[in-house]
Image (cartoon, rainbow over all chains, first blue to last red):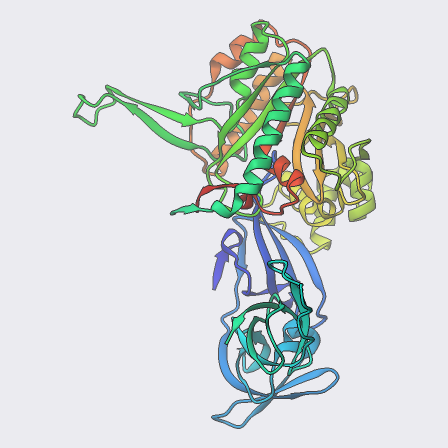
Length: 186
Length: 332
């Protein structure tokens, strides 16, 4: 689908210099004197490098028509994440460097949406929230009553999250995987 | 669009008020006269890239759709047309701190279609002398807000030639030759179909140069723009560059200033050029402020003028990265 660059949104996929990129950031920007632009940060899904680019806001951009397919996350090795389409049992893999930091909150066996283009997996649509159990946490020190005080804990996927000091080991918490922030107790 | 209330921004809004107070104090202390101005005008200065808001004055008792009792009015995208009139009438150093309106600029981290502009003019100085004054203003605000995240002791300076060479690997020869410049842009992957030299200049500046400016602990002054991007700035002696600069903090353009053009013939020529670009870009065909050109025939004194996006200035002193974080009410 062709759109004006001025309508480009974060998360969409575009061809940039012949390669598929995902829009990481798209912000309208008009210099004090000069043409109206769409400043974009694009992540090349092959080289995994980010590139800054400024489109003219009325420039035509081809946005890729991608499908999002629900898959089960199986496991990861050093470089890749492996998924399975539960209806066809087809397996797919994605580079950890493409999916990014969110992978540290992925739990084996969880269902996720994988973006597909021409039957090839591109990346993950990160869930808005993940629920994970705390496996390591220190008790709150007595007298540590400053409101809003936080402490680091380790969740079952091994990631470290900052949580309010009243949270204890064994509890399950919800996290926004894109920001890595604690969002509440479950 | 809807109305959004953000009372969580009260802390930042208080900083907004501190900066506003500091700006007024600094300019009054330096004998600038604060001017209150209309925001509705029947005619505007043609600016090639700015879309405007159009409305109309109407007499409620005129029930017909005939032109009688109706007149088109435009919300001003900057106070320049009014302030320069007053300068020609001899009002002296002056400033406006108030609302300005730019249509077709959707909300983003850096834009609001309705925003606050600080514009001031100083008689008898050029653009680089006004840069010294702007630096003093920034120092004054930093003192008033007790913000030490950036030093305003000096400018980090780059001419446009230096910046394009250093950050975009574009030579002076390529920069000043539109054909070669467009060829270079194409080799970098920019789409050159329907793109002008000015468009590609803005794209490369935004994507490759600006992210590096104002990042070394000092604000960056980018100066001497190619004559095609002169806007209403005076040209240098060799006519290749315009006496215009912009300043950046943390990769963001905060404001610009120039030695003001006061050659009436040249001014008229640029009005025609700018109107033509507006027409080609299908922008609103507003009435051109002919009175402005007439007034300039009496003589705009030698002066330099600065325009600063006030919210962006406040973003610096509140350590925020989005304009919306300063507002209690925004229309989104």
